[in-house]
Length: 182
Image (cartoon, rainbow, N blue to C red; front, side, top):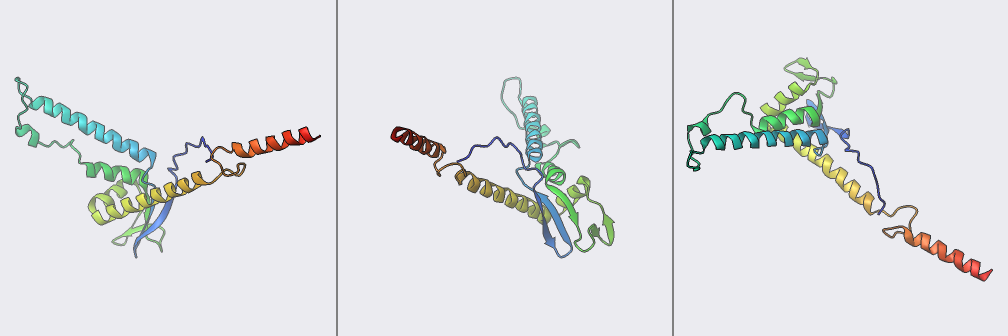
């Protein structure tokens, strides 16, 4: 197996997929670095808010009591679905268009793609959300399959061994024998 120092995240890999007769979407890979980091930030933030809420609900005796404060929801609270849609719209769903017109048309009005428009499409259409997520996962899986097959291929300078040392060692032995024969 050949070694590599390539740390490229392949965030730019994307493909157009047809959603229906009137819509196609340019979708990037699900293992997009920015998407993963954003989702991680959201989850850490929510865990911290939950921890703070639990501390507030703990009585002076140290016992946790389920009270009305747990049921309160502020305007600042965000669901994981909201966060997923915002991150997908920004980093994975890269464009949406009506194929014949090269822009997105909804109710005969044309739209240029933006993360805000993508968010609205994803949050309001669960089927489209699932479509984007599944195609992004498909691209990720295809790329991982290609990477695995590439890693298993022997280096062109080796004899097929994992290290490539056999070829060098074999050439060295030939030279040693030739020198001894001379």
